[in-house]
Length: 239
Length: 69
Image 1 (cartoon, one colour):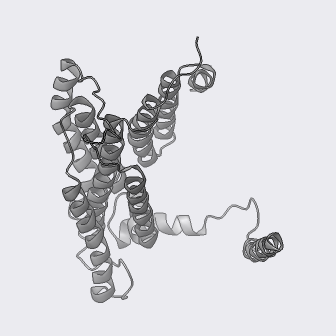
Image 2: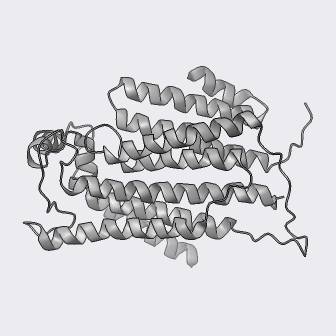
Image 3: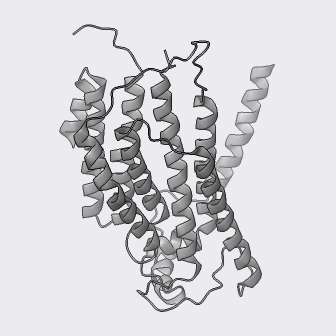
């Protein structure tokens, strides 16, 4: 009975999917929309980097979905892997992993500010040069990773990470809603600022603001994930 | 890149296999850059080379080795 229900559900699902996809011809070249993007993004939005224009402006709602998926992944990982260290019961004894060597520590200290600046540069200049919020956030997370593996006593305060993450996500949604209120067409994530001129730092309207928010959010999330993982290793309770 | 992939499959030590996969990511990001996709190259370099390698290394350090070699 149960199997019959499952099979009939799958059949219905497959039929609806087939209905949807049978209209799309296989292997046909479709260039209509990409040429539109290539022509219009430098003129309408004054954005030099077309990829950024597509990701944040034309497909901005998808980006919000991606950020949400990442947030859910980070939260689920924290929920599954979070274990409290208990010294009294001896359930999760703290295993002493060896301290990193002095060379690694000095190099980490030296490289950390440079990596931070690179990450910030990548997401602030997301509308001018290749890269953007996701890439810059990942670079910032690698900087924190360097500190986490070289200094055993270095810990990321999860309270602040959560705050940064929530504020960044909130500002993304706020910018989108402001576009709905102030924009000329009243649509989500619409540009409501002065677009400026091409190849300027202050160009592209809201795109730079959205990418800064995304950069902070991705950096905080990935740093939180790495901190959770590394502290699991420190407690050593996976057997 | 293909050599690194084959090495990652045939090697016994999981840490070396992880290094092999990160070499694949490094070569892949160079290929992306040469194919005029610098955005994807940056993502691949940051996530594929650094972050996922570290996640694998942490996972491997939490496992035990059962077979003798």
